[in-house]
Length: 224
Image 1: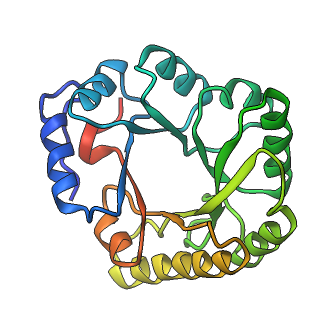
Image 2: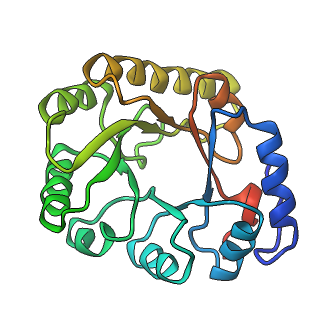
């Protein structure tokens, strides 16, 4: 269960250490710092955290400019194409690529600025219509069409489970995402990343093969 904290709480470091002790060594922790102040990000950095997730381009760019250069920044929100030029110089990976058009635009911009970028293809399996992403079939079709695009590396799949307390549904969603990941690796063998699981459901995601978990509330507390 999520533990509400104040965003400037000294417990940030304790929560990061506790999460790391629970995560298998092959699973990376993405500290989702979106909507939290820079001071909270600095607290996490002081605890050894280097990988952060943001969902707004300007917020990511501003934080990245004020944090040490060894920070790794993942963009996890909906990508507005008119902000790609601001995003690409600051980001290490875009986890939320949800259309072939967007992927091709990312490739063109990354090539223009000579800064290759890693991406994950976002798949939609959850019950909520508000969640974005490819259908499983669309994702695999996009991978086949775009596997050789310049300046982008398709590294795997990102997805979310349904927002429900029904563990059977959550487990089924994560298994569906993992299956898409397995099929993607048949097309792009290096695409081994599987980003799924958040504060409320990361243990189930890890059980289904997650390599990245995106955790915000359990580190930084409730958003402002």
